[in-house]
Amino acid sequence: MDNQPNTRGQASITVIEVGIGLLLVLSVLFTFALGVPDGTDEQTQAQLDTYAADAATLLSNEPPRHQDQTRLAEVTKSQDAFDREKDELERRVERILPDNVMFRVETAHGTAGHPLPADVPTGEATVLTTNGEVTLRVWFV
Image (cartoon, rainbow, N blue to C red; front, side):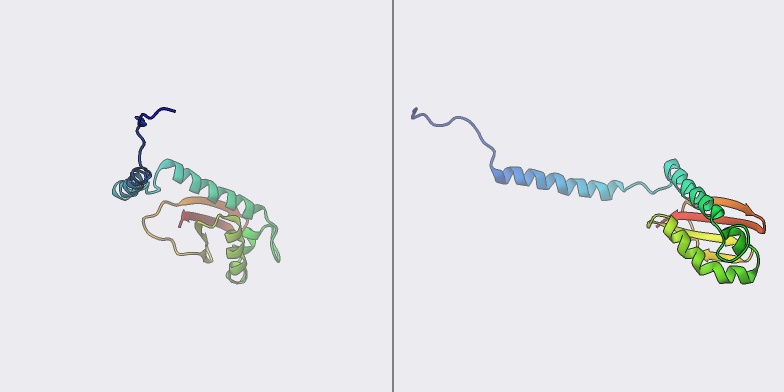
């Protein structure tokens, strides 16, 4: 055993903790200063269009609850049919889409879903049924 002092330097745990804390605080500050993407890029638009097209395809191939060829043809048949099926249509679309996606279904007899907010990117799909067109619009919450 040598009686010589240890010449190796060590960083204090407190200094390491301060350094990590400083990096964390700076990363949060830069996130707020620089912001996060606003969701208007092409990839977001493509994702919304895909959600709308997929949901419209599923709905256009589902059997009706009462009469007609498909679920969407049934809701476009008449005002009475739309009023009768509106709530169930909303529940079905909510089950199809992810939780962070809102929707609006538009027909000649009315709309189902949520009011379309201004200035948000939307995806859109239109389906032609035997009784008229159905347009599905989707957007991120």
